[in-house]
Image 1 (cartoon, rainbow, N blue to C red):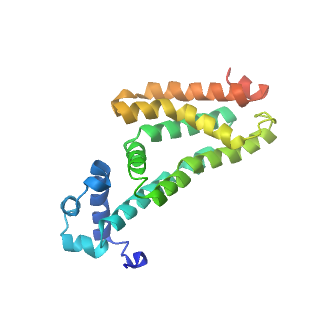
Image 2 (cartoon, rainbow, N blue to C red):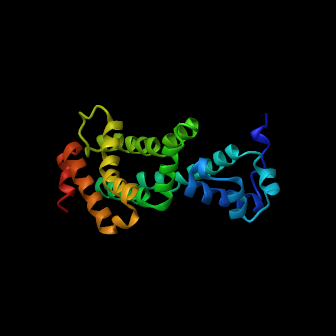
Image 3 (tube, rainbow, N blue to C red):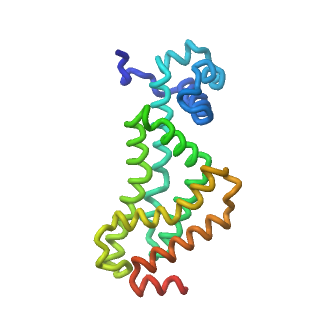
Length: 216
């Protein structure tokens, strides 16, 4: 059996192969992507391609994990910003909604869902690095807002509260983009979705001090 740890994972040619594989996998999925198509897209020979990835499965795993690394960028910085609760929720809400409607966000989600049965470990990684990590970051911030008197003390499940905010920001724009395409969601729709999410969330979980911020 080939040892995955022996793969060459750096260099200009490797990046070229990975980018070509990414474009083909994102467009055609795992089953529809051929090695010939990937080599052609990457502008390399099949021999060069196989020198980096002895089989298509290893190539797919490398592409998907590279995509997952991009999921991490900017998340903790926004959730941890030193701003009032409504502003942090606004920045975080726009991050969530814009990620959902972006080409990168929507194509990664489609690929994770489409290949979850074939690659369950990668689907689990996607959930851990993406949706679950956002909820955990929000949950940590919610603990602080409870101490600051911005969120109610009787909220038992802060992770569920975090999930509620994420879904309020994401579900409408995500469904439209996934089913009808990116041109169905403009910046105004994203802004209205996020503002509604903030209002609904703070009315459900916020204290009077937090609710006063909605009127400012």
